[in-house]
Every structure is written in C-alpha cells, then in structure tokens.
Image (tube, rainbow, N blue to C red):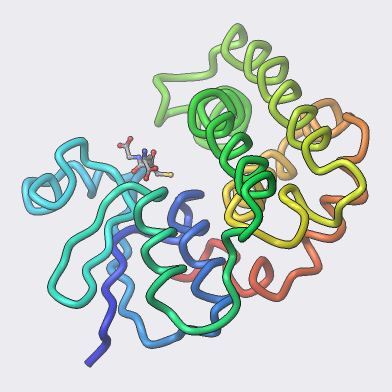
Length: 211
Ligand SMILES: N[C@@H](CCC(=O)N[C@@H](CS)C(=O)NCC(=O)O)C(=O)O
C-alpha cells in the first residue's frame, strides 16, 4: 500500500508542481487519484471535505491531510529523503518565495486563466475572452521578466533547482502549446531557461496525459 495519496489529475499545473518535486526526490511510492478539474471533479462533496475551495492538489501522508501547494511541497521536501529543493541560504530562499508569490498571485491567473484557457480550454472559463487573453499576455510577461531577473546568471530561478521552477515549468508548458507562446516567452533570459527546464527528467516524466 502506498504511503502517500495525491488527489488531482496530471493536467493540473499545481499537481505537476508536486509531481516534479516527487520525481526530483525519486519518490514513486504514491497513489494518484486523478480528479479532473475540467470535469469539475474536485467540486464534488467528497473532495470539498478535503479542500473547502475544491482545489487540487491535496495529499494524505502519515495520518495527515495537507492542502495548498505551498504547504504540500515544503512538507514533502522536509519528510522525503534526497536533495532539498528549498535553498538553504536565506537570500536564495527569498528568491524562490518571491517568484512563487508572483506566480500564485498574478502568473497563474494570467497565463492559465487568460492565455492557455483562451486557446486550449475556453469552455472552462466561460468562453474566449479577448481582453483576458491580452491582459494575461501582459501580466504573464511581467511575471516571467521578474523571474528571469531574479534568476540572473544562475542556472535556475533561486540558484540551484528549487520549488520555484516546479511552479513555473508546468504553466510555461501550457503556454508553449498556444500561438501566444512567442510573445509571452520573449523576455530576456527565458529562452535558455526554458531549454534547461524542458531537459529536466522530472519535467519529462510528468507530462500531462497519463493520470
Ligand atoms: N492555492 C491553490 C491553488 C490550486 C489550484 O488552483 N488548482 C487548480 C488546478 S491547477 C484547481 O484545483 N482548480 C479547480 C477549480 O478551480 O475548479 C494551491 O496552491 O494549491
């Protein structure tokens, strides 16, 4: 029996954030319950008991249910063996947390709800909204620009690979499937960074489409 249960389908960017962390930790002993966001499955009463706002991911581990990606990823980073994906140096940790904050507050809504949804799943957001798409491009570019400024000459956003990269990569993956990718990704430094992210085994092993 698995020691960890992960609720949420692999098409969720936040679920992929968790799965990239698990992959980097080489942890495979988990059961994924693939609740499909596009079909409203996390809004069912059973899942609302786990997450009052009907969101994924949620995990259960060692007798505890944990919701919200920030809590889940930091918990798993602490309890699972292997390299840490949270920088030890306070300034690097701040780099990571700044970019995660920007993604949570501005990037996810702009790039998923605005750009990706417009092209890939408009029905989920009530139809194609040109203003939301344009605004998404603008806000999304701001987030990517700041993420690349924060990265500077480092290989990844917070120096070494960290949770911040696992937040950004799944969102960028959706944008890359749209005709707006060229515009959104046209910020200094993003091209090389995106190449490096796509080469990560944890990115390649967590492509949506399976569960
Ligand atoms: N604050 C949450 C956000 C999670 C989130 O937005 N998940 C999306 C999928 S990527 C979701 O569950 N959406 C379901 C819905 O809005 O109906 C976290 O950090 O985990």
